[in-house]
Image (cartoon, rainbow, N blue to C red; front, side, top):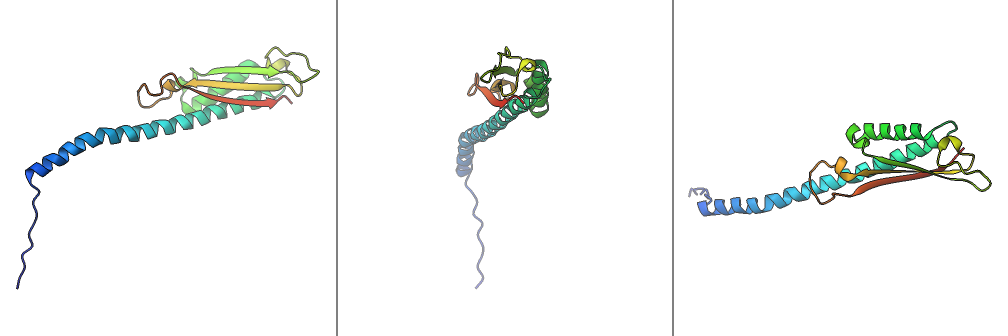
Length: 151
């Protein structure tokens, strides 16, 4: 006895239902995937901003460094890591707390004495590094801080 194999053909109304289901699910799926990518990039750029603050603090604690040199080194680091246009929007602040017995350096690295605490803060708006345009993280700032004692 020979059996014939039957091929099931999908009815036309079932193909239309699959198309409608895909049209409903695909935009949500793509939004979730792009959101995951964008938040991952945000975490990565936040880490780079923290690394830039750390590099700036390392440079600031050395004798003979100036605030201008530290700011330029931070902008160069950010420019190579996240892009030159984003680095221009970074806000860099340098605060120096004098150690007990030291004179106030006036927030100038060149005037800092041994054991003065130098804190570097780098803030960058997320809009300048976002890959996907959207308003869900508009106005969010990525901030990195680092503090070291002057040598």
